[in-house]
Image (cartoon, rainbow, N blue to C red; front, side, top):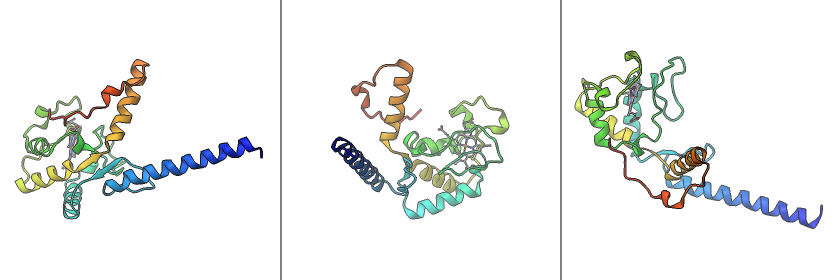
Length: 175
Ligand code: HEC
């Protein structure tokens, strides 16, 4: 092996070490993100909220339509949004209002057939709707993942480099 080649190999090996280090540091900030998956989703929920939230989510059969933590019912083929990171998009009071609405479609319009649409959970005890809202609002996505997605989208659509000024963090969307 020539000297130049050795140098290139050394630089490549060093880059891998640095990248792994960055990945590790990022993941240790968020709870529930496992290092090997490199998933940008995490939850800020306390251990109690995590257990209670996942329990009610399972009992109510949300996973027959939604995917969360890569879990979904593959036999049901419903075109509903994934709920990973939903708490970075909607806050707790928005979610509470959504779950309490007689018609969720009055808040979030739907073009799906009625049987696929988000059902109303207005009939649930207030405590359960609060729990669902608290748990859902704890499901976050890392900022860098959103930024990377926005950047890729911008460059794809415009063919221009993503302007640095757009990297500001927008306030939470509370439609
Ligand atoms: C019958 C399928 C179905 C079930 C069951 C269901 N959902 Fe949905 N959900 C949807 C669909 C579809 C949407 C998108 C809005 C629409 O089309 O009505 C949605 C929207 C949502 C949203 C808003 C997403 C956004 O973009 O803001 C949240 C949060 C949500 N559901 C949580 C839940 C939770 C929690 C449960 C269980 C308690 C649940 N859903 C059960 C189909 C379902």
